[in-house]
Length: 134
Image (cartoon, rainbow, N blue to C red):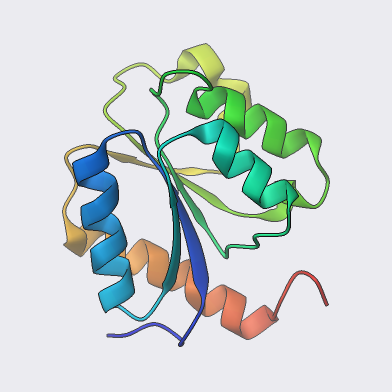
């Protein structure tokens, strides 16, 4: 099953191998990918106009954590509308639970059979409802 051509998604994960593998898979599925190892850089890209239909977000990263990224995202009314799927190895999510409302959580290691339908559901919703910038 391939995605609607050109729909952009964002991957924010400091694990180079996982981020690159996810980017390769998503590109093969027909998505455009903006991949970041640094949450601050990813947040700046969002603030600069990158508009993904979903963000795949790791929580445990040096510098700005995924929890801090999500908190900053929620402070911006436009950015807060972008759906987030947390991809994490964290066993305890209660520390930043208030920032994780309305997100899906996939625990590492996850399979593509789990991830791809989740991403496809967000892509379908984006294709159905159109751009948030409209």
